[in-house]
Length: 277
Image (cartoon, rainbow, N blue to C red; front, side, top):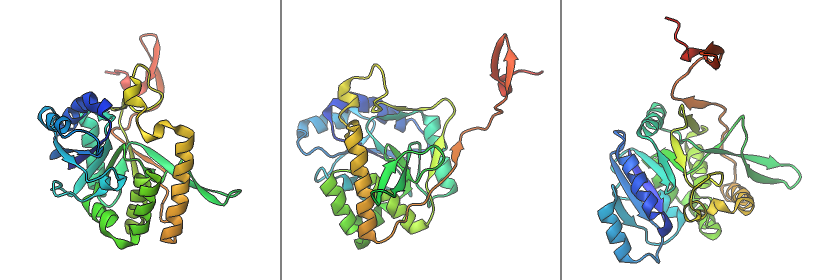
């Protein structure tokens, strides 16, 4: 697959060296592209980046978030991994997510999921997180078929929705989930790995991560961010005339082990970690 990393903040350039190297190390990855969307970054800075990253550097024509899903000529694979510049997975996690996508390439696959819901009181859609179901895969890490990039960027049915993304400067990932669900009538697939092999440097719950890395993202403004994304869902529903998002209820995991606890060396451990030979 082709990895498209969205870059904007120069504060994250040191982190990008590690992240691009991590993706490049995966045998599932054909190429890595850093899509730089900050028009004010000096050309010299990007030239230096090109020489120091395990990735090609492509400058977007503007800061529009819609360019995250543009079918760039650099994409030569059916599978495209769209990801943020603060997510660092280990190669085995990337390989597992790719294997799940290959089993059903019409779906969006990723590690981070959210949900939509209808609020009766306000009669509006809201953006939320629910433990038992989900309908949205975030572009922190999202694998999709390249055909959906063409649908998102070129299909006139989504033209007004793309304008909403530009007006809100947000919600491109939600719109892509609308596009995928509209085309395949299926929910997304959330994947998980044993030991949590994906590091999210942008998560506000991190300790010991510099503010320059953690706080430059849109989602660092938590309350406002969630409200705006609920507004996006409501607006997308309005302009498309229907709600295509589908709920999914399970998670694909890298291995299945017993959940029973057994005594081992005076401690309780998962029984399948016990040696019974």
